[in-house]
Length: 220
Ligand code: NI
Ligand code: MN
Image (cartoon, rainbow, N blue to C red):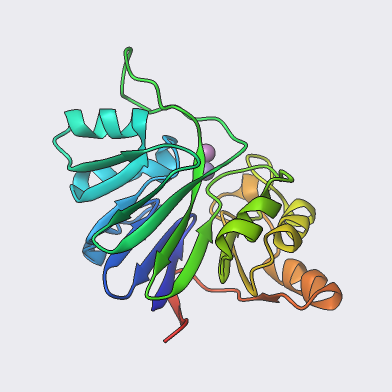
């Protein structure tokens, strides 16, 4: 499987299927990634992004799925704690400590809670934390779902910063951690090299810093 960080929180997993998580990049489009499945962690515009325009099978929490259905999208509705299989890919929705709303949805639409995903494809488990604060139940995500790779926000202000993400990484226990949700804007400035140095000095966890658009190979 190939994992590509397109920027911000947007990650493309390419294996037996193409799964695009949080289809938003700043000042550009991710529509040409042509995914089979889109997964949306929460309703904020920097995560919902181009979900409607992409118009693919979309995995989201019940409330967001309900909204996307009104836009004509084929949706796979789920909620925190559940696991589903979509075209042979497994999606577990995990808790996130964050808020959510759907910009432009108008009254009558709730965004539900913010979430994360553990996605299992071709024998590799990838945890995308979404936007979240540190919470100790990340230990359970590690114990139950054994992520090989964890995508963690490090930009601070709206999510974990470097110190919290370091503890999150030890809770989750993935061998590889990839920082996301930083340096998109001035307000979420963080130095991924500082994050990498600090974790690799004190643990066996490897931090892979990707540039926007850069890929890594994982598993077979
Ligand atoms: Ni958010
Ligand atoms: Mn965000």
